[in-house]
Image 1 (cartoon, rainbow, N blue to C red):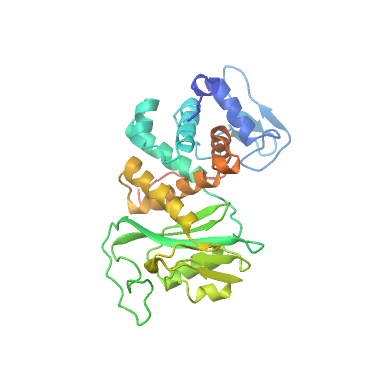
Image 2: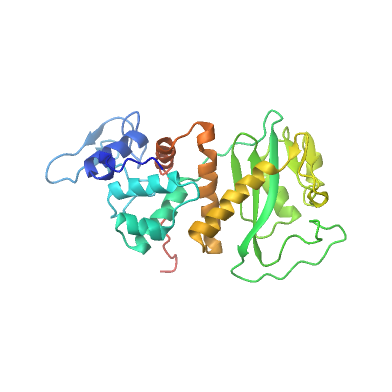
Length: 316
């Protein structure tokens, strides 16, 4: 990590607020209530808290945190910014326990902060992968036991995988797609079976793409609906045949599993999709694509707009 802890944005609230305003409002403030961009007035004086604005169109008051994952948080912006930098700069993540010790907040607060930051990392408008005939690798893996045991499906005459099953019944399934030299997208379906994998692949990959998979029966039929389908036979110790391989997606799975086992250690299944989002975000904004730690953190801060995560019980 190359985080400069002496930077004013990490120890001065005014500097932190101004930094966030510059990231969220590069062209000037706009009202998160009505969307107005004109007649926005900064309220100053002892009777108003710092950073408060008023929209003369709807008469609403707002600050830079309104309409973001930071809204109504009592945690200082300096600590929010440091948490964002720590989580985005660590290749395999940083646990809430570590955040709680370094920032001097409670573990519960750190847990809520990290999940809100993961929400900010979500890609709000994903585009189809593999356009222009690019190679996209697809694979599935299993990580950790399901929180609730699931009854295994009946065996089929045509097996989904080389072992004859649709994956271990009581393991959490993860399906990931990666465009070579580009982005990754990972999902946690209830089961890694043909209907679920088909929906994920068709909703995220352009038909122009070259699909690269292993010999799993999950991909035999759907591979015919793409421009080209290249497979490698891992059971015969074949891992590369010309341009056909799944080594890129295997590398992503390696980073994900090392982070989950070595850093996070435990993850409730209902939150697994958020951890996948975190690993996707860092991979999609990696150094190899020309994104450094500061730029990665800035992207996460910009992504906080228009998102909320309260974890409030609806029946409370």
